[in-house]
Amino acid sequence: MKKRYMTQQQAADALGISVFTIRKWRVTGRCPAVRIGAKWHIPVEWVDALIAEAQKGDAGQEARDEH
Image (cartoon, rainbow, N blue to C red; front, side, top):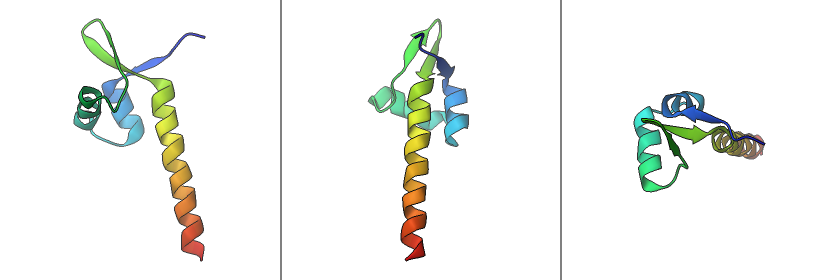
C-alpha cells in the first residue's frame, strides 16, 4: 500500500494547532516527516492516529466526568 502524505499546513489544520507547532515537532523528532521537493510532508496515518488518540482521551474524560 502506498503511503499518503499531507503538507505541514494541512496537518496543522487537521489537528487544530499551528503550523509552527508541527514544524517544532518535526525538528525535535516528535512528528515523522519526509521532504518532497522543497516541502516537508507528514504521513496521513500519523495525523489520523493522533486524532484517534485525542478522541479516545476525550471519551475517557467524559466517562470520568459522569461519576
